[in-house]
Image (cartoon, rainbow, N blue to C red; front, side, top):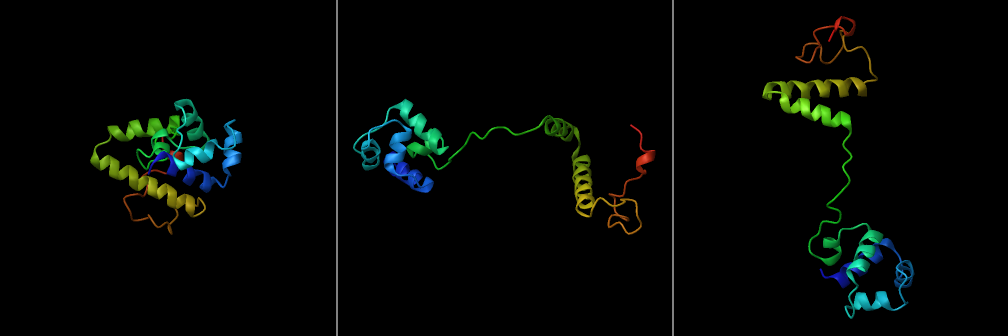
Length: 139
């Protein structure tokens, strides 16, 4: 897909008129029409503005690829980074056990956070059953 086709597609997705887009870019009334018909091409700085308005990459806007936003902001927290570091230090068995433990924690959370040591616990006879009660656990 070429720029002029992509611009029309994005503008229609966002449901804005050519005139409204031209106004947002401080263009004359016919500029967007000329872009969409392929008669004119915007400058690089204007391409950046257009990509920003539609929240897409320049590559997507120009039809180089179909990836709209390849550079999503990194939303990883410090806790995630620490967990990832520890996970990387585990051997394969430790990784499997940790994943099972996470599943156990999630099921406990989904079940209203009841007593994980109760006799009716679904993990009672599972390797997930924690060996110590919380009050006995010491670091």
